[in-house]
Image (cartoon, rainbow, N blue to C red):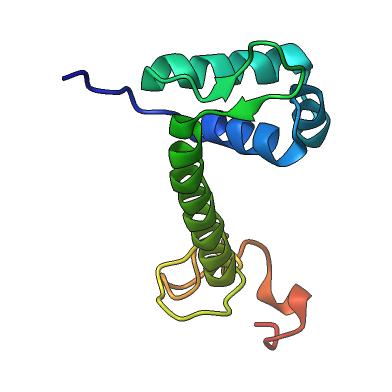
Length: 133
C-alpha cells in the first residue's frame, strides 16, 4: 500500500482555484499567477498525492476525476479551517477576543501590553504627563 505525500496549502489553494474558476487560465487570473505556475502546482499536487485529480484527455476544461471529487471535499474543509484560524487570530490581534498572550497591543516600549513597565526615553516632562523635576 502506497503512502501519499503531504500536499502544501499552496497546492490545495491552486487546486481549489482551478475547480472554482473552471480552467487553469481562470485560476491564474484569480490567483494573480502565470498559467504555467498554476499548471505546475496542480501537476505537483497530483504527483504528491499519487492521484490523477483532473481528466485532461480531449477537453480544454479540466474535469475532476472520482479521486479529484474526494480530494476536493477535503481540500475545501482544510481551506475553511485555515480561513477560520486566520479570522480567529485576526480577532485576537485586534483585541476582539479574550485569551491573552497576543501580540496586538503594545506598550510605549513596543513590548506586548501587560509585560512589565515601559521604559520611555527622554524627559517625562516633555510629554506633559508628569511635572518637571
